[in-house]
Image 1 (cartoon, rainbow, N blue to C red):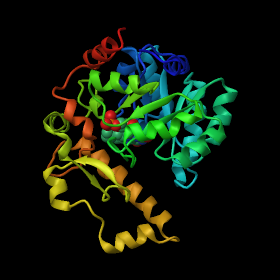
Image 2 (cartoon, helix red, strand yellow):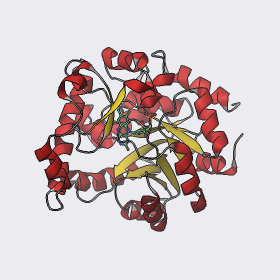
Image 3 (cartoon, protein in one colour):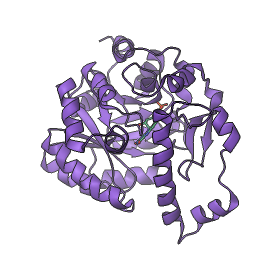
Length: 327
Ligand SMILES: Cc1cc2nc3c(=O)[nH]c(=O)nc-3n(C[C@H](O)[C@H](O)[C@H](O)COP(=O)(O)O)c2cc1C
């Protein structure tokens, strides 16, 4: 059953199904983003992935997606000023996206105020990723239109709280709330909506589709994995990220060594250490889809692997979610 905030989300995103295919570095290729939107959900562009992994100049990449679907897509913007050159680029990407007609933005990390100000002037919408109440307070004060509740089961950099706990903490803000993490089946989708979420964001489910350009070994690893095969590693970016426990992960382990741990914790050094880690992780994750090998690579995925038992077309997957809401 649609609650009134689901209708707000559908109005905000201008879509038919309250489902977002979340931004994924390195898995958000233009064909995947476009296919989700074309099927009635909201495909979201991960700009670093578009440019650095899939090789598009940013505007050209957006135009490629526009050539595949006329339906709305979203853009992920990392708002943190600390992430060096990527911050300057994020400002450019936002301007280009607005110019190309994108009107739905998902912000993550930091204070989204500068994005909200620009996007509102263009009549657009901003949802912010949150894992805790204090981040939500800041985002709401900045004027965001909705919150994406990244829970502890999510793929990528997971949160620390379960979905139901996040929902009850965030409901007081009165904004549309999007559940993110651990959901890949039509039943799970419906349950999250029935619980009071306005929409659901999924990532892992969409890697195991024909339209995602990840390699066959990565997709098959998702199909084969169960929830208990997902482990958190600090080795990728210095903060815990969910990966399949591939032979590579078993070999290299999941903990940073004591010196790295010190660098990541030290008040003066942690910022620099995280930046170095992030840069290194961009390279090693790019390899996870260009070199499709579980013995050499990380395969990022969340516990939602449990509900994924085949590589399918986006249309087939989306058909089940449409049916779940009686569409
Ligand atoms: C491979 C992978 C890469 C991701 N990269 C990003 C990212 O670059 N930015 C971001 O905001 N979220 C990222 N996420 C999180 C997703 O957008 C989404 O919130 C999450 O996948 C939901 O959990 P699920 O995988 O259980 O569906 C990533 C997730 C995965 C699986």
